Length: 134
Image 1 (tube, rainbow, N blue to C red):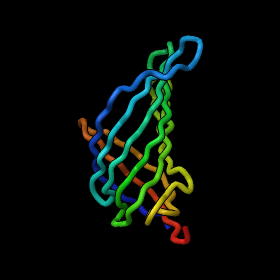
Image 2 (image 1 turned 90 degrees about the vertical axis):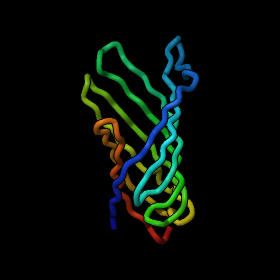
Image 3 (image 1 turned 60 degrees about the vertical axis):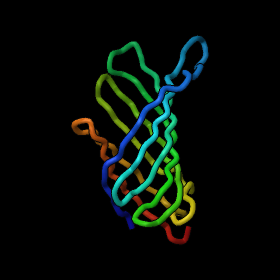
Image 4 (image 1 turned 180 degrees about the horizontal axis):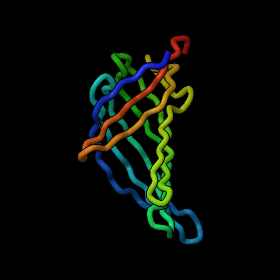
């Protein structure tokens, strides 16, 4: 059965060395450290690769995030994959739990997350399911 938690999170971004994509092209590499509040009480580390294009407003990024904490009191870790696209100014973002990545009491976790930024504050909506059979 799918459930949902919502809350706020804090985020700090740190630039890393660019990633060589060949032929002189580079992808920006960034590390994000997050702290989630609410029914999802957790921390995470994200590594993101991002590229832009010659067309204003068009770019893309991929990232892998390791989250560690408690989801409604159930402790464990899991990974989430990010896929972000900016198509001439129109954004789309998909954050999905990596299948079978849950550990501890989060074994069997699946789901997706949405991120909203309002007046400089970051909010999450996490739709998830926990397969107790793991």
